[in-house]
Every structure is written in structure tokens, then in C-alpha cells.
Length: 126
Image (cartoon, rainbow, N blue to C red; front, side, top):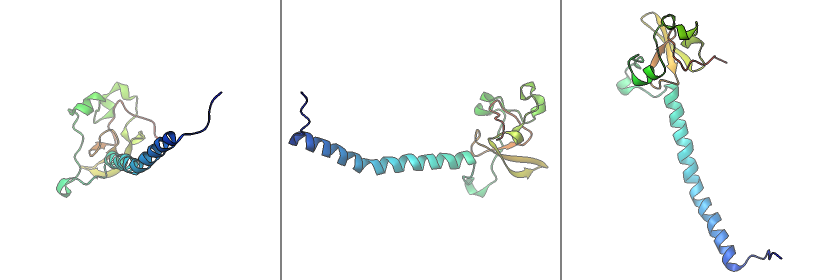
């Protein structure tokens, strides 16, 4: 037969656990949510550039760019199959540079990509 009565020691042990979790939870949750918000800001590219300078373009020789097979002209990559950044869900139009549309990409935080570019992470816009 199981005794369902809680003894004094068990009560205080459970109480200490609940109080400990309640004391630590706000700090942990605040840290998690603020770091997620900061990460989203970086992915959107809304973090201001140093000194108010314009955001840089992605360098095709950058390690991340090479890893995702980034090319500045989708016509130069047979893998693109006609897809380009402008039709990708990760792309958001930002401005025009040298007569070409450029925008932010969640793959390349803090940098701009050409609308006509393509990479292996291309994902159909919803």
C-alpha cells in the first residue's frame, strides 16, 4: 500500500524547488527572449552599420557565400533553374545601387544581395 501523506521534509523540499524555479525563471526567460530578438534584428539586417555607412554587399568569395554557392547573377548558375533572390522568401528589397535592385537576406545578416543573385539556400516566396 502506498502512503500518499507528505512528510515535513518532503514538503519543504518541494517548496524549495518551486521557489528556486520561480526565482530563476524570469532571468532565464528574459535572456532567451532578448537574445532571440537580437538574432532576429541581425537577420533582418536592421542593425545600423558602423558610422552610419551603407550596408556592404555580400562578397562572393566570403566563406558563407561559397558554402551556399552564392552567385551575383543567377543566369551564371545552371543550378538556379531561373530562380533568383527576388523570388526567394529570405529576400527583402531595400534599395537600388548602381541601377540594380538590392535587398537584405536572412542568410547574409548585415549585408545586401542583388535581386538577380542566387544561392543554394533559395526558398520559394510564400
